[in-house]
Image 1: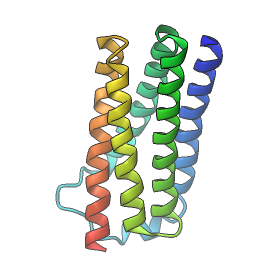
Image 2: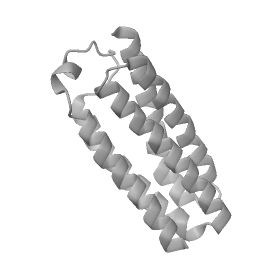
Image 3: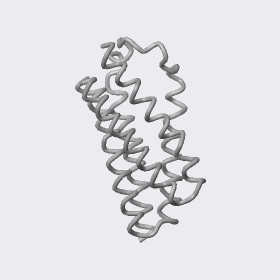
Image 4: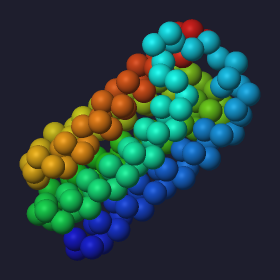
Length: 153
């Protein structure tokens, strides 16, 4: 069951990386024309952070799936899947139909679930929590940026 759980988690993380990248690049001219918050990081930061976040999620998934008991592992996977589903909802809603408020709401839900995932991960060990913390912070920052985009545009 541990190998199956790990496989499911890694497939979810890979799908997250592929699908979000597909939608983000759909209308690059549209995004460039948006009013941006003054505190937004430079574009290159996103290019560095997202691959690191996906790698961190993969490592944490592996650690959790091999260290958790079955019931706790299932709960962790459900929260991961829900968080990723909301994050993908954000990517699609923001970049395809351009519904900025709906996107901000979805990303806020993903950020909250990520902090829930962080709390569940604390049961395992300090290492996966340490690895997951930058991703949780990044999701919170991304949610606030998304709300700023909704307000400015």
